[in-house]
Image 1 (cartoon, one colour):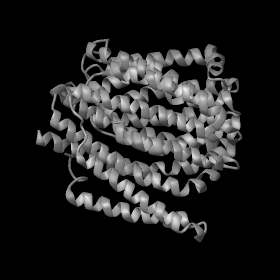
Image 2 (image 1 turned 90 degrees about the horizontal axis):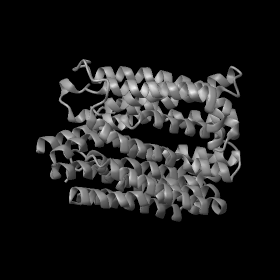
Image 3 (image 1 turned 135 degrees about the vertical axis):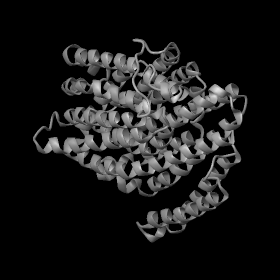
Length: 486
């Protein structure tokens, strides 16, 4: 068991390193996004964001849950059989996305735009529908690679190449005079380029196996796992964009554009936790097949420590500089600063508790995942309808964060029932204490230096980093960050 724990820890540390390298690429995205929003305007960016949200929901329909199915399936296979069932899964998802693209381009674009409460997005949807096939296949190739515990496809392709290519293409097309269609064309171009990258990564990760004569249908076990995951992914896809739809319905396009920027900035912290989900699912899938409680506690706690340790300095940076960052998007965007901090505070909680949901996925309890998503939709819908009319985008940020906190608490209880244990070690509490200590030092400095002028945020953040990095160094020397975690 100890060898397995050490291997899990090495894979998780490798994931952190890849994440950090990915951030060097992704750091260009918010800078370029500022340029895109300024060029196209908050109104066009808001309409594009809603159109993209609608199309991502359609992609989830086309995937049929098979992306999650192969992520769960691949780690359970011997290396020589690791491509078993993949050909059929790729074929069915590719065919469904092609049919959906044709239907949207020629028949359904007005209906989809009306469903998303944005009739102005019809023209963009027709263009963007051409990206459905590369979108869907990219997800399939990425999830197959993630099943091998290789995060390069997710970090460098989906979160790096895709986002940076999209904003670069949008800027280029704007200066070519394609003001009305530039965002939609950039969307299609970026997914085509990213699909090519995902295929290359897949070929590298599966180089020790070959395609074999296979059934035209995916394995029964994959279908059994995928169906409830499909329904939950559809529900989750709607959940992740429900705030955009309600903000669009209850406010104006400019407010929607500001809130879209808030969500983009907030995703910087949220994506830290989510980037661990696939590799942790792969690890927990193996553990679930062998019912190894000790290995589960070690891997779960270690992953949680790494997530929290990565998120905390990012949040401290946003606390210090959100007031400077948001106005960069344009006039009026400064009103999104508070919403960013509200949303990101909840994503910190999500980092500490949210991996319990991955235990459920790894242990094959996709039925519970579906129930949890439906509960979260109900909670978020009520909170959005109550808070957005009175508190605008701040209310929307609070509603989203609180709904996911409810989901995290439910998942923690369910994981306790499924595994018959709480899977946290003391190391998790230690890293949380360090965060409070560092945050307290930052707050104290802010209060004491508040009369010193506008550079109080720089000094306070610098003090946070001194305390935090000192604590991380101590933890590293004790082995908390150098090996798996009990």
